[in-house]
Length: 327
Image 1 (tube, rainbow, N blue to C red):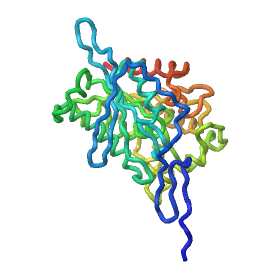
Image 2: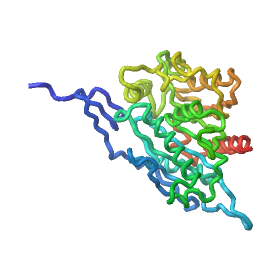
Image 3: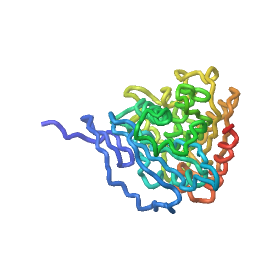
Image 4: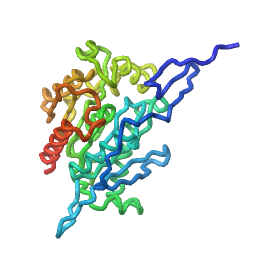
């Protein structure tokens, strides 16, 4: 009689891979630490953007979109959630709060897509889905969807920004490289810039902050490694182009033109040095890239506490970035 299947990978108890290849995803997650901050100033609605994979996105629209004489078109901000490519959703209360805050504080329309998760769907599934989510808005802008009237109302398709948190920041990098300046293949959608919040990158060689294992509430080096083992194509390692944008097999960023980048990280993050290395490399290559480090902050300091004082500073940075690159 054979032995029973045993756990070979365990990601925070939320996702487990067993020795026989089966995957168990724990759906009843305790979100009691997060209270929804919905003051009614932002309307939100869910839409299906990919019927084949049953993928949805949530659109957040500030309710004060008119002046006394004219209707003001608002910029768009895509928000790609984090979770190591293995979990997360716009419906999670921390990300929902984050999007409500972005929409109200920046007076912008926020589009928050879900994407297929690993290990059931390994990379590049999430990357492919992120591009599909942008093409969905493009179809709306081109009036290719007869049911898209409420989506396009008040939208300035010429001012679109991409924001990504953690693995969502990795997606942001992918899109920036894939689409190039101004995202011509998405016309009339025009992407103006990217905000990467502690983008989740990897590599076989440890950085100083990873090797020292700075204490974090949410992350450990072992968990980062688990995310990559679960999300990268089977048989590949953390220098794969999906993980390491500066790796030997990755696109040569010297030859790639990019839209402006705002790169934000906490000073006490395990990933701080890897993010800083990425930002410095972009600047060395003459890209428009600003790196901002928030002293003493850990991973998820904005997305998990979007109403904090330090998050006000983050929002101010993003607002200035959007204004600077909107014309």
